Length: 586
DNA sequence: GCCGTTTTCGGCCCGACTGTTTTCAGTCG
Image (tube, rainbow, N blue to C red; front, side, top):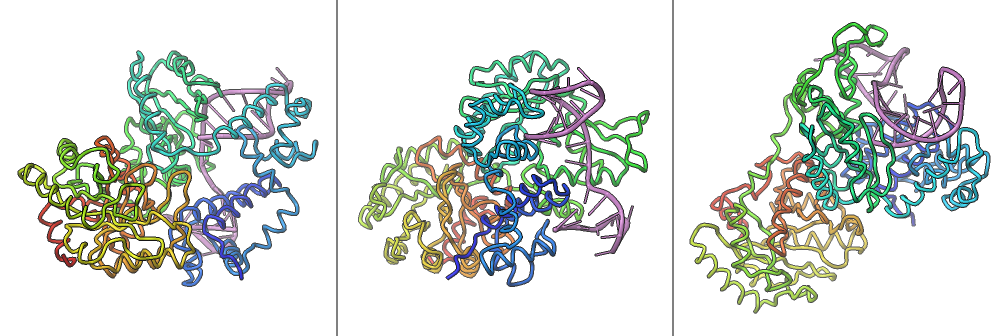
C-alpha cells in the first residue's frame, strides 16, 4: 500500500530539485522555476490529488506542463524519477550545506569536489581542522564565517513564530525611534505581511544621517554578532539566533524602499516587470527610465515617491495591502479593481471564545467581561472547557448549568454596556463522540466544538470526528480547526475539502484562533473557506485579560486570507448575531 | 521550466556587502 505524499512533501522535493540543479550549474531560469513551484505548492490549500483529479494542476501559478507531470508521478507512484536520478548525481546533504548563511551552490560544490564534504558534520570537521581556508577563493575569515553559520543553524533551526518576532521588532523600533535624525521607521518584510513565522527582521529607517543609526543598531545589547555593516545596510544576529537587517534611506525615497523591503520577493519581481513594461526599471530607490535595450538612460530624471500608494499608482494599480503581496492573484484582482476591502480590527464587535476560572482561565466571568468592555467589545461568549478536558478542569453538565446562572447575573450587572453570553468549548473526544449531550447543548447560547486530543489519528478517523461535530445542529463554530501549534505541532491530517463541504452545508462557522501559537485556520484555508461562502469567526481564546490583545494577530491572518468584514461573524451587531444563532436551531 | 494588454518563442528583477581579489565572484535578500 502506497503512502500518499502530502503537499508539503511534494513541495520539498521541488525545492530540493531546485537546489541540486543550481549546484549543477543549470540555467538559472530552470532552477528558479522549480523553486517557485515548490514555494507555491507549500501554500496550496487543496490536496494536490484533488487538483490532479479535476485537471487543474496547471492552473496553479508556477506549475506548467512539466511540473504538473512530475506532481502526477509523485501522487501515483510516491516518487519522481527525475528527482531520484538527481539524487544519484548529487548527495542530498549538499542541500543542507547550502542552507548555511554564506554558503551557496558554488561553495558547496567546491567543498564537495575538493574535500568530499557531503554532510553538515563533514563540513564542521573540515572547518575546525582549518582545511577550508586554503581552497580557492576561501580564507581564514570565510572559514570562520562558516563555523558561525553552522552554530547559528544549530542554535536556531529555522523561522520563529510571529508572536515572538513582533514584540522584538517593536522593541527595536522603539529604541531606534528615539535616536536623533530618525524621521520614520517601520518593521517591513514578512513581519509586515503578517506571515505566521518570520525568517529575519527587516527594519527600515528614513534619515539623512545613516551612520550614527547604524552604529547604535550594531551596538544593541542583544546583538551577539555583526554580520555586515555598510553605508546604508547593516545586519546583526541577536542572542536568540534571529537575524535583523537595517536599511537607512532618505525620506524622499520612502515609497519605493518600503514597497521593496516589504516584499514578497515574487510580488516584487512582478512589480519590476510591470515597471519595465512602462519603460522604467524599479529598484529600492526609484523608477529609472530605460532605453529599448533595457539600459538606464543616465541623464533622464529618476522618479521617486514618498509613499507606497504612489509607487503602485505609477504602474497603474491601486495600492495592494501588504498582507496580499504574495504574487498569488493580487495583481489580477488589482487590475480588475476587485481587491477586497480587508477587515480591520475596528470592525470587530465580539469575542466568541474565552475561558474563566471555571475551567483553566485566570479571571472570573465578571473580570473577563470588564476586560472585554475596556477593549471596546460589544458582546462576548464565555466558553469554558467541557469535562473531557480534565487537565483544564473542564465542566460537567452540572457545573456548566451552574455557571450559566453566574453568566446571566453578570450580564444583568453589566446592564447593556456589554452583553455576556453563555457557551462552551466542547471537546470532540478521541473516539468521535461529542463531550456533552444535545439536551445540555440546547440550553446554551453558543457552542464551539474543538479537537484537543487524537490529533495524530489517520485522516479518515480525525476527519470523521470533525464531521460529526459539524453536523450536530447545536454546534455553531469549530474552534482552531486543524489543531496545529506553531512551531511544534503539525496540523491534524484532515480531508479539508470534506470539512469545508460539510461546513458549507450546515452553515457553521470556522474559527481563526488569534493566538499567535495557533493562527488556525491558516490563511490559504481562510481564503478557500471564504470562496466557498463559509462564515469565519476570529477569536482570542483568552485565558487572561491581556490575551484579548492578541486579536490583532487573528485580524492579520484573516487579511492574509482576503477576508472582508462581511465574511466574519464577529463584525455583526448583537441582534444580528443572536438572530443567526437562533436560526441555527436554538 | 514558465508564461503572454507587444510574444506559443524568447524572454525571464536588482542592488549591497564581503572576502578575496587587484576588478570581481559569490551570496543574500
